[in-house]
Length: 61
Image: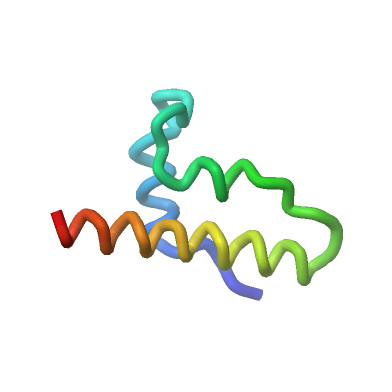
């Protein structure tokens, strides 16, 4: 089972105290997971991928 990446956890930690309003991974994070392990795996992967995109965009700026 895939776990949330350190990058995803870090982004969450940075934004959680601010009610997540402008968190760049919030749309993926708050998406419905659905039932079952496969659904949880897909959700975790989508959040991790969103965190990678945020990191990539930050590096390009």
